[in-house]
Image (cartoon, rainbow, N blue to C red; front, side, top):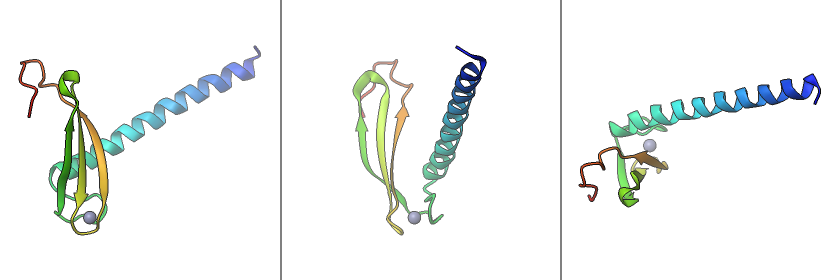
Length: 90
Ligand SMILES: [Zn+2]
């Protein structure tokens, strides 16, 4: 292996990590808005949860939301940490 290959590999890994964190940050920001009922697209308070799926005690929950004004649709997977107490059914 020459130095160039190693440099490229390190750069690629760092770039992947940066993109991953950016993605997480953007998702988290959107989630905050949606939690307040605000559509990330048209900024109206018209977001509703249309589908909610729980994956049992594995701790993840899939939520699909829809904006009643502009039709924006998105789904999120939320990790549910409140599953330890044995009350994981909604
Ligand atoms: Zn909207």
